[in-house]
Image (cartoon, helix red, strand yellow):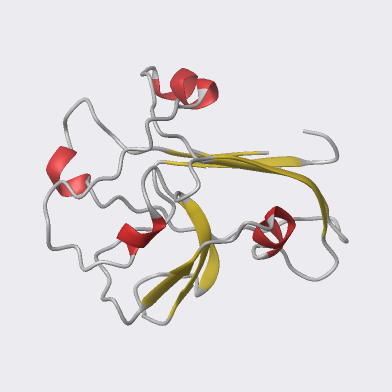
Length: 161
């Protein structure tokens, strides 16, 4: 499964930012996760087999989250960022809060957007569902949206199966 910024099914998550601030500190908690099978397992359900998990991301750019507010449609899962997961907690009270990973972007996202991307965070794994369908809930957010909307800089997210 390719969830982004093939095999049985391959998902890659690649993100400008999967979840980001604007929410209060008490509502969002984040934690690094270095066990990639557990990371991918955080977004799977019963009857799903996950294998061949890889991540292409700066070490501070991914982890797990839990959320107790009422703005997002998801309460827990995987957080992929183009920056640092710690910045997602907020508060979002500083313009241009950034953490450049100084890592390359993603060729597929470059192709889709027609631009060169930077600081990609890609989670990729194979998944075999126990039934005849798969369902994914996700939220995309950008801490830098207000500062950069309408400019040549845009956070992007891709979900590829």
